[in-house]
Image (cartoon, rainbow, N blue to C red; front, side, top):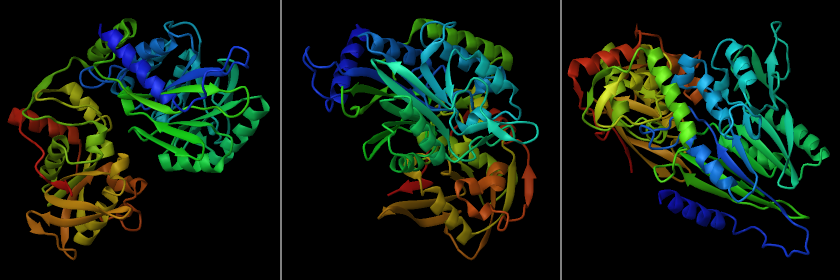
Length: 516
């Protein structure tokens, strides 16, 4: 019964999404080509979120099969970060990710011609290419990388990764569809890979795809929305941009080009129903579909996922309970990258206590769990997700005026879910929107109004201290970076020790950050 309800609802939504498409042609008229696109991006947990209640690739497989049930071809496009950062990938060399993707067509061994994945920046998390090359070889689907090159031992970066084409043309639903895949400049971030100019690469790709007869051209991208908009405005001929990297649902139309981002971890997906008339441009519109408990899981994929979960638990030596939490510890990205959370309060309080400073702050993008810890047990697997990256601590002097500068940057992209948003301890502030930007007000440190001329002591993670300029924190540029006062290793160890010592964590949201 639930399957029928979901099926009916999805058909209704798909009808709405296609309301702008041309009417059905008569039998005597040329038949329009038609196909569908199922978009995912930034999937780090094949099992889904909220103990499997939301997202996950078993639901993606079920939805794909449903979309295919009327005989219409369905393309599955993955806009990057397909392998990392994932706790499962960290310990199992990304094998589960490829294994599950290989099964999205219902056959783990056959080549899936209609699944196309582009490189995200985290595909290059490992310091050597061995794992990436092995997973590319294992893939029974297409990777595509238009502006990402492999570097040889001499530092020459002009060759594609093996088996990864620059562009791709597929015959879909009676028409030729062309694809290119781009990664933002510097996104490879590793000595064995590099990226070329996005716009130049896209222009060349469009020209090549048009010469091959592509009626529809799709860019599969991994970059910020603003850069996708620039691409759409600068490169004529791109019909759709299937984007990743931003982690939160977004859609925008630039000229005639739709640009979409799905929520990370398949919490939502985007579906396009595309009609290509005999003459004239393709017509479509995006439809966002929430992947929650109303959406069933494919049993075969779910069984594979559970097998990998068991393998991971064995690798980790079990899933120890460290303590409990009285309140919800929100770790999903829209929360830790956009507002005060109890989890952020816990981590920053531990950091501040560890080095005994006036204040502490952590960038929300460094909290990688993208899941919630409900009231109840806090486990070692939770800690693996929170501390996917090592987080050592550093303290330093910081003027009040410099803190104001940091807070202005912290909230500057709050609606985009940017990782620069700071979780905080030892101070409070309010902010509101004025025109097209946000303004910070009423900053208090230890309950007292902030003094712009006063020097305070601050604690943060070493990543932000060393590389904060990547998120716009110019106070951490080489020319301005404050000197260290003290250092402490391993915020995870300090957090686990705190949880064990108190037994029940009672951190909650308490008004440290107030949006007016």
